[in-house]
Image (cartoon, rainbow, N blue to C red; front, side):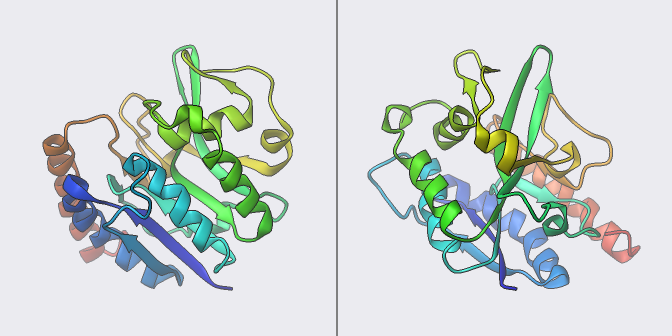
Length: 217
């Protein structure tokens, strides 16, 4: 079974990817993943976050399992294999954040089963060109396909994609500000200024180093 962890960090975000890679690389080695880490946008016709879809479309044709982790995320507990979380009958898995009265799926950490169904899903996301400049970019397109209304985000009518093919991940796999979990396996820092993200990620890296010395990572 070929498996890959992928991410994209271009422009100013390349510095973030250099930090996060220091957790991605040992995790990939430990659990048997290849790494596909990009520092250039594959399609300059759209904002950089849409590059995720282009990269994933290629990878789901080459691998049986693809794990996407945003460049501003850190694997802070590497003991469990995230790939084991995806049930055999599901196409994909991701965390849905519940904050107050809102609930929103977050594809910053996203497991996809490779194959034609994944290609079709990614094409459907890409085709929603009215969302090219939406503040959530490709994540907004995915939310819509799952049955979410946007602006404000809320679940409308759940689609078959959501009911039958999507699996919720434990929030520990994508712990963000506003929905933080004390037992995080991946800390994710969207929405912060770049300098703040670098500080928070560097702090995590120091803690991971100590955990590895103590064999707790």
